Image 1 (tube, rainbow, N blue to C red):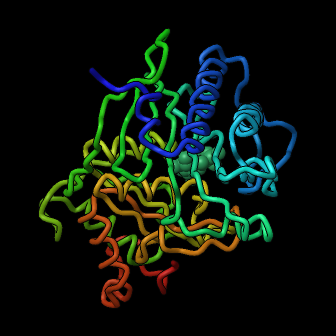
Image 2: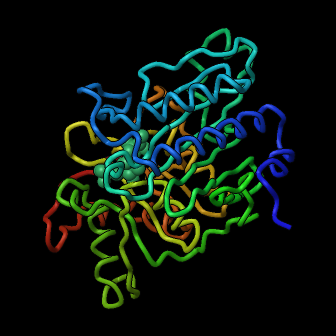
Length: 339
Ligand SMILES: O=P(O)(O)OC[C@H]1O[C@](O)(COP(=O)(O)O)[C@@H](O)[C@@H]1O
Ligand SMILES: [Mg+2]
Ligand SMILES: [Mg+2]
């Protein structure tokens, strides 16, 4: 008999269970808003969020739902992509929640899978004494992490630190039900995920890595690669966790993209936690993401995650001076590594 989310949460700490339950209930409400098109992708004036993006109505609506959810749980601090500053909540709360309430915002009006990404961190008296330190905890210190996917299925991919599990909420069901009790990311990647329209802005080693994947069986990789780019990290992540692959959002030369687009605290860290718990890896190209000490809530970080072997291969390209010096056959060279 498959476990319900309630049964699964009993295996973790009481406070984490209480928070995840509230997040799951809020996800059902958000899934309803998305399904009936009540709130869409219209920009809400020209307000920019912490990540520097124009906010959309659904971004704001999602954030409101998760603020209310966090207030019903033992959360002392709430850090959201949709708010400039972290919000203090329950003075005696034991947890901090970092969240991307709506991931994949460019897909809101296109009926493509979108999601919510969350990271749960501990709160100690030292954090309460100096709240600026709450979201400067390394990703390795997370108590739990997960993401919801609002797609053909409402899905929760979650880890409490004992592997990565997957739950499905069928329409009309009483609870999320476990469909995978231990994800294991295949070691070998056959697909890569990157926004190829940015190719001219990448550093040489990334261009060379993608060139070699594109060269396929006749090239240095001696096998063919497929490509997928949903532009919703949660959808790309779940596919990669399920059948292997690699996701890259490197830094590039565009204004404001020196560290790429993905935010460390509430996107990269939770995804890297889930990836490592599923036997995969997540780096900034070279270093494990979970070991990076964040400086700011909204700081961006270059990200490479997925099948462990492939993530290590990218690190070899980035560490190989020959690769940096190599002139790409098509795109010419563009200088030093930008990590
Ligand atoms: O639009 P781009 O540059 O292809 O980037 C797409 C990436 O940006 C994101 O949408 C960033 O998340 P938000 O939508 O929450 O800002 C990821 O989900 C996705 O992988
Ligand atoms: Mg996002
Ligand atoms: Mg978002």
